[in-house]
Image (cartoon, rainbow, N blue to C red; front, side, top):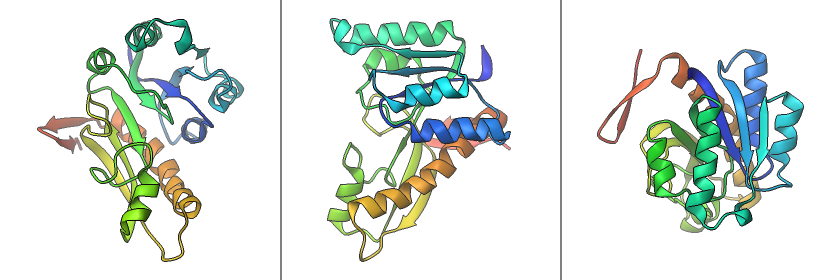
Length: 204
């Protein structure tokens, strides 16, 4: 298993997958995207992966499985067979089973559009606006059994402007997501980190 080999799991447009693949092509993110899995047959992420020449691009249909756990077992088997060290969630909208999370503990990451632990869940940008915060942003974190609750790898902050709408704030957060995600991946495979309690300590 190569330390820089990754599997990406995506459900939608694939914008974070695209910036990772672009960073790989540009030589600024030294990872090898060996596998892309989507639970949606019409996910644009699948087309992005095929166009970039990712070796394995798969749609696995959750409806073909008896339950979430059995679907996740197949996903894990495919990831392991591809020799992927890291699992990168890029707009993957399914809740992962506890057994899947435990299997890849410390090796699976996600990006979330808020400064965690504030505003976990699917409506983070809307919640931040509704609460009236003056700053928001995004967080790259390890995945554990608690939704958006794993140890934090990196964060970026954006101001919330008085005239912001859901769309304008989300767009500004996505600019930072697209910078932070490939940069964090690059740091993971080049320097690595240790975990002390909940704290991620980056090696030098």
